[in-house]
Image (cartoon, rainbow, N blue to C red; front, side, top):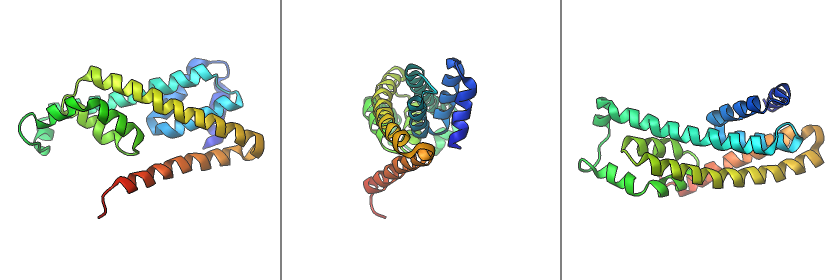
Amino acid sequence: MFPSLSALFAKAGAAPAVQALVIIIGTFILEDAATILTAMEVQTGQVALPVALLALYVGIVAGDLGLYGLGRLAALWPAARRWVKVPGDEGGENWFGRNVFRIVFISRFIPGARLPLYTACGFFGASLRRFALAAVLATLIWTTLLFALSLQVGHFLITHLGAWKWAGMGGFALTILLVGRIVANVRSPSR
């Protein structure tokens, strides 16, 4: 899988718009992996740094807004409103509205939390403007940190592993995912 991404970028060649589109689509599939792989492509010289970062930011924020939008659409479906039990008529709306920044920032850093929490923000009508601002800020922080770390790891892998750099990057991506799962399990109450 990893070399095929390189092949896509190589075919895109000097077409930054095509490279950006590939990165954006990648963020919709698995955004942390897309960030790591894109950093590796920047490190190998296949993608320019500004194209990579801008495409990552656009793709991730668009995905976040899409989750919010799915929640809003679900709120318009009467059957979905019946499935969700909240205390009082406006309990969820008030809580999500008051805590949208906290929700977005915390869920950005906790694996598996974005889907339910971002759709809940939309479902309960949290301010779209506040949600979007929080999503942009959280994405700028998290993606930039992960991208910078991935650049450093990518440089090390290219320098020391040569042809095995993709295996090393796959191991790095797997480590990031596993650490996220471990953190998610540690924060969960015991069963």
